[in-house]
Amino acid sequence: MIDKKGIKKNDSTRKNYPATLKAKIALVALREDAPISDLSVKFAVHAAVISRWKRAALQSLEEGFKGKTERMAKDHTSELKELHAK
Image 1 (cartoon, rainbow, N blue to C red):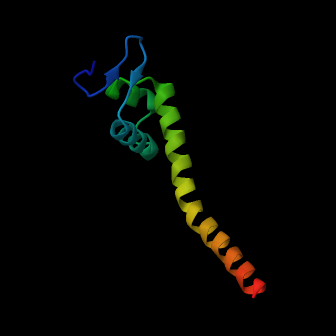
Image 2 (cartoon, rainbow, N blue to C red; image 1 turned 120 degrees about the horizontal axis):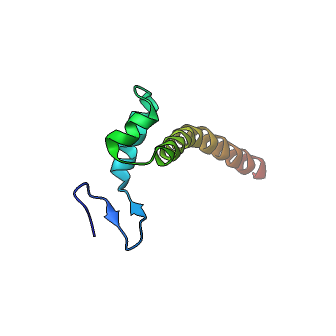
């Protein structure tokens, strides 16, 4: 069953939030314009859940920036191995 906000509810009490809503709330939490407790009331999501999404968003951002340099280093290492093999 899906409610008005597009949140999927199972037979149990656990809610499944769409990724777009998670991203939106995490971005608002990252801005730190309002305390997480206020965001919790505004979006009707528990503060611990918002904190978890905020942490996950920060980790994803860090991984996004790490990936490019690590790939470049890996490619450079493979190129060196190829050149030394010749």
